[in-house]
Amino acid sequence: MRTWSVAALALAWLVPGTGQQPTHITVRFGHLWDGTRLIDNALVTIDGDTITSVEAGGTTPGAIDMSRYTAIPGLIDLHTHITYYWDRKPGTRPLAQPPRRPAVTVFLAQDNARRTLATGVTTIRDLGASGETDYAMRDLVAMGAMAGPRMFVAGQGISAGRGWTPDPAALARQAEDRVKAGSDWVKVYASRGSFDSVDTTQTLTFDELKAIVDAAHALNHKVAIHSYGASGVRDAVRAGADSVEHGIEIDDDTFAEMVKRGTVWVPTIDHNRYYIDAKDEYGFKPDSIQPLEDYVAKNLESAKRAVKAGVKIGMGSDAVYTMFGENTRELEWFVKAGMTPAQALATATTTAAELLDQKNRLGRIAPGFAADLVAIDGRPLDDIHDVIAGVRWVMKDGKVVVPLRAGAEK
Ligand SMILES: [Zn+2]
Image (cartoon, rainbow, N blue to C red):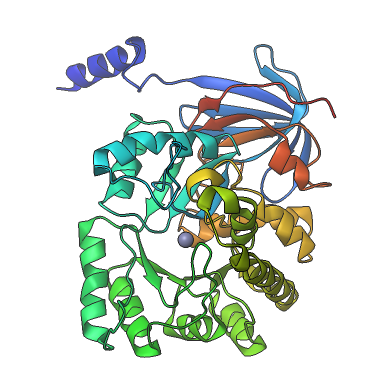
């Protein structure tokens, strides 16, 4: 039996395509931000899918020379809808497409996944999909059968229909059903608001939110609550949400409560900027633009106060359709809100990894962590824009997923 195991191991080593060949790679970077500090002339050693050492200085023959670049950890986008795909077919719009079978959606959404990897995002939390398409993508990526970021997914979000009578017990059962069906996270819509609507009306009560959170937590699953308005954010935080998505005009008491509880706020400021820019693709009415602009300004105002209050903030793009490829533009808003570039990077690395219960595996370049590395042309700790425009190479789980590409000369 033991002999057989050794033989099988040897075979796995030799036969290409089994996906199990141990690989030993060393890469040299001019600079490296490991998630906590900057290291000059850094040598990273990778065995298989894991980083085994990070050292400063020295020379190693055979190391891949990336000394022109600064390495940062693979980034985490905490809020996507990766199965929302649009093929740009003339006569259609993102929200007016012919129906597709779920398997077709999964196949086509690989394009969103590739565009996401190209931004340096190697992990996403996908917060809402229909037809279990997100479960399928997560599993295919984890199997190595599909190129894409590793995925933590929520399945279908929980919401109240129009004319809904409050029913905490029914919503608790829905949360349990999501977890049983395969959701990693439970996503809840506690208010209206999406696409060209910035309607802040709360749609679920505190008691309902609490029932959902308690049911999910009893099964060891976390909860993300969407609220465009302040009252929904307030109730979501007090109900025990692990993260709150969107939100404006958030009161100082709620921010203080978030600091106390460690609740992560994912403001998704950039997604309304995207809707303004993409208004023609969507066919949004002209009178929807000013409210979107007002929402962005209020979102930023709350973010400034959250930064001052010390609230944990996470990077979520809320990317849908043609926004994939712009996943990290949120970071620029965070710097505008008063963060240093290093603090902004933490929203997409260490803070995000902790929220996903992956703080010993993701969000840092350190021994024992997943070999997710991004080579940046520029100085990301001096100018966050270099993270957005300067991605030249991406590795995920020890495999190059975005080959080295030249950028425009700076
Ligand atoms: Zn969303």
